[in-house]
Image (cartoon, rainbow, N blue to C red; front, side, top):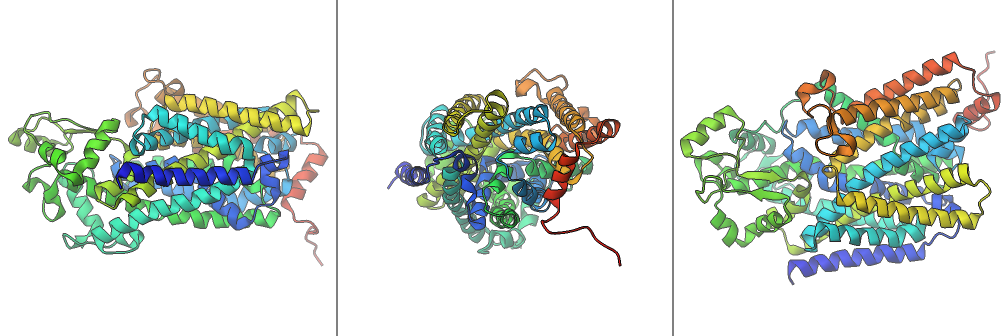
Length: 603
């Protein structure tokens, strides 16, 4: 059976499963549409949260970013630490309290806690900006996966993905999405780990990729990471395990991802779906377990993909020194079936090779490195001839590079689509509930009937899918980078408002609104200066280079500083204005202190 047919079967079967679940779990009430009737088992909710969380960025881009980072793989471990650490914050600081509050959405909590329609509206705006920015990355992931594995254009793939999400999200709501995400988690975790196990066995003889990463490279007999460092530095690249050139920026980036994770609306609403307050904490714990299954494998996937890619381009690097032999030739690529993946990915435009000096070989090296420039001049090379390797292809191409069986490649395609679609559905639900529940019912028409609100929620969802598809057709960057910007906005706006709303009785509506506004404006302006207006090329005010950053803080790390601005502004404004009404202060105390617990007494 050919690869295309296998891909079609695996993807088709998983899509049929998702739509079947959505029909079975169709939402009949607003409670089911927004919060799955608050009846989801915490283990299943943890699994659904894992799928909701592990997006196209986690599945497709993250290992690619680690693999191809120009400053080495270590610096990009911030993604792993930040995205996982955010769940610890969620479990300890937010999830149980928000579930105890008993509402459907994040803006509803902010509106009630800060006794202000304005605060709720501002939270809706922040939520929509964050979710729309984030969903672009998922649509990009859907398009990339479809274009490669179903051999259609990226745009066509996007339309197909949007239609599938439409089918199960618009009708199923949170109830349909939850049970679909459980299935999607199972698909994506199997699809991610099976190729990693195969490749770890090939390269290191270790069954577990996590052990393979710190094991021995079998072909050369040296430690795996030592071999990888040797190969990449010989070709002029930064050592894979090199320390971070800017530890402040790495720390702030990790913090931005952590508090951004804890402030992401589509993740938070998952904790409104469980029956009891304790279940919200258990859900977060289970989510961490399910997420760790993928996140502990990702560094191994990135490292092994980088070694496989490099040794494919320089076959001699497997057992000796790369530059002692020839680079791969164009004739080899055209005639060797094991290298057919190169031609296939070249057709997508995500991998570009160019024989600049016409010698028939494809020299892959860092042509900006002075030592390599000397060697290049001696040998008649005229520049690095692998001119583009998109971060987003590394996980998808990894099984092909390693010559794994066709069914594994098809499984990866199904897993990548499960990752992108599960997160897209969660984000679209967050947007839909913000529009129908917080905007229409909360502000425009408070007397809308249950049936009317459910219809508004479905129409909002449909509209959000159309907008997301349009933006996915013109994506402003590769999946994980766009997502990281969404994290900065969540870190600077939603997270501080929730934290202060739960843990401080003194923060009032004026303080909360001032904090969110200043956090949003500060973060958005900093991003705008270096990335341009909605990342349109050429609209940035300063070149997006480390030399231009303030204290070396990149636009992707600024969310942590934006959060400090938010906290500071809220505290100062609140201390200068009237305290919240007593009933709001009592509400805050009731959320935080368990029922029946009195104040401590001294005898």
